Picture 1: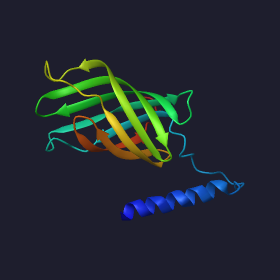
Picture 2: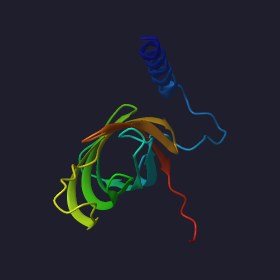
Picture 3: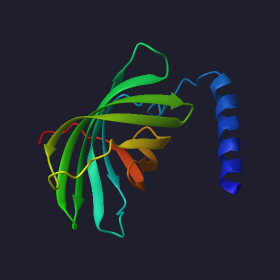
Length: 154
């Protein structure tokens, strides 16, 4: 309840600030711009036996507050091994919230033959221009952190 009040107060302050004239100085990166490549990692789940990492790319969509996206998830579980799954997804933005709904396109690497892999959906809150935090909402639920990917040379 307390966090909800803080979030409401922060949103009210943001509304007031967006109505204010821009200053002549440089502003920090626009946190409203979520386009681009992100890396992500969940906290361990299934009693600490599994962890998911991956990348996601958000690209423009003709509809406002929507994005086309692709993600590749790498799930490693001590119980059954590693899975690498390429997924298409749709992202929708509601203020500082981003909802990602995925569809499996290709199993690049499989855990166990016959084991069903569910699409990886996420519910996120934009915390800054380079960080979103929320939850994986799939066959399991786990906290997830998204960081803007560095475009360095590998």
